[in-house]
Length: 497
Ligand code: G3H
Figure (cartoon, rainbow, N blue to C red):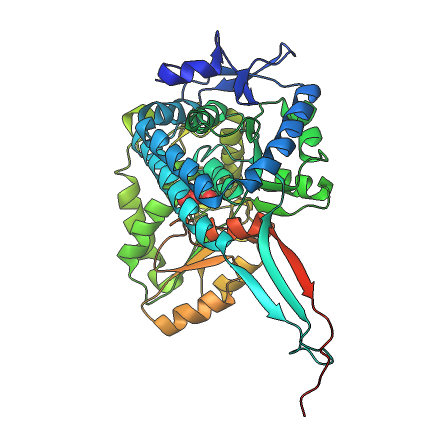
């Protein structure tokens, strides 16, 4: 259960503390931020709201701790990370319990998120050992006009303090995907949890605490974002921001950020292009899995289906038959469709659906909503003048546009403000490769729905979907800079005849 056992240390009465200098602390602000259970709509947890002064102290400690951590041998850094992985897996039940309550993640998926996160940490430790142990050696004379008197040694060094801001839908997995690479490369980390998902992040942070990392190296600050969001993201001590979340927030952060590296995973309007020679059953299965899992609240969820007219009827009818079998209800019961994260999110989804309905789209199922719970819906005959053709519902609602040619589908995909992932269903590998080449998205999946994992694969968006690339290796590289030393030897005293 959340807040019990080892996790009691994170609590003061019914308020969750912030983590600084190796200890859980209450803010002197006396203010709290409330976390709502999406299923009941009622407040479930409270977290302390830090002050500017407390944030300043956190960054001060993070800077000091980082200097020592960067000198800690790599194998020891890796050992510590492996330890966290073991601790997280040992506590997978209470960690998952919190995900169920805070973000309404179906119970089985919640456990999967914790285990996947442990595995990610282990892989990161191993990959970090390899990447960080490599450097480059150059000599000067291959470059015209130079003698062989300069020897150049380059290696990767940490950036400093990484500010990690994970999203509500993967508060544990997308925290460790930032913390793991940051720590193995010798950085320190300050994490700002999402409001929904704050306690899951706090519990995850406690696993790092139990592993015994040096004081100040990792911190977790909970804040009132409206008051201190900008203060945090523009803080002069921050050397890199790794953010996953909404497009508008990400873009606002990147515009205000100091001149520092940014890793931003923002929204997506992930396109599924189903060509006339596709395996229609497989496409339907992937629409279900890729579009409705976690009620569509994944940046990589299938968010628009572009089906060739010749197969569209068959595809829609197969999907409808499968939608009828989905269970709808609370995450504790492991239902397929669970409540979306907030009332405002449910209202936004409803707005998109009503707009499409008014403009003549066909709702394949009856529109049904109770609180934050929205019944799964396929919307057929969507046209480009409808909002849902372009906007990201982040809910269990999938629009289908019927297209005449693959080119029409590619144009639609490439006209989006987003460019995260796309996928194409066809039995012709040549067509698949041509489509993949033409689709302007960070990743194109052939004959499978979009997905980020496995977590060591590169993962990146273009246009408003993000900056920089993720995946274990890319994050490790992104959280380092190149340091070069040049050994200048005396000029050669002789020349070759
Ligand atoms: O919501 C954004 C996540 O990065 C998606 O990850 O493809 O593993 O669900 P996923």
